[in-house]
Length: 295
Image (tube, rainbow, N blue to C red; front, side, top):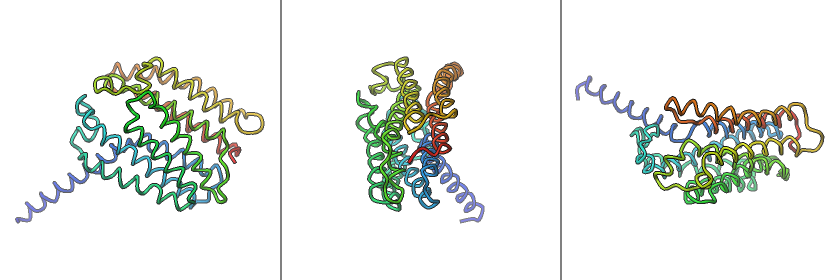
């Protein structure tokens, strides 16, 4: 083979590999994956994990998020293609469905292994969160029970972080309840941009049954409930920062709806509502970390 041809072939192979890697990253739903992983890491710091414990929590949660995102895109590939979702890497041809599915299996297998660097009880809870999330991808996504996996997975996440501490302390009930409310609210917010496409492909989860307005209200109420539980659940009076977090939970959702309408008019996907959930979640966790009232 001529040197120039060899270089050209090598460049093509490198380009294809780069495209596939980028496609895998996009198929993992990087924005929510990064947000959930960051929340778990901050919470790990807040409850008193040593650096090794924080690393174990972050890696286990990251692996679980990669598994869920990849499984979602692999399972939804046909529906995404049918509705012309060229922003998704599999329909766009950036990465193969098989590659994404294999990545999901590997990440799911790695999750409990990484969590075992803390303890077996904590590993069980993060595995429960993962299995619950995967059950959402199939078969509960298109059922009236679609909100349950979000509530279970987000409730199990802070339980995992606390139980991963030496001595496996019992997670506070208010912390688990707040996580469940946040997860349920995230479900309603996350589905909003896809209601029309989902209707075309036969997906009929709870948000589809109650409609866009009902989903916005449900997301806002659950987000406020999560924040209120975090502020008023721990012993002692709420702090000024806590009350400010409650105010943020009241103000941010309506602002996100306004931003979503602007995005829709401009022809972009209105993802502001889900970003609002993640923003308030980050505010809530920073509040917990600074208050020191978790365990």
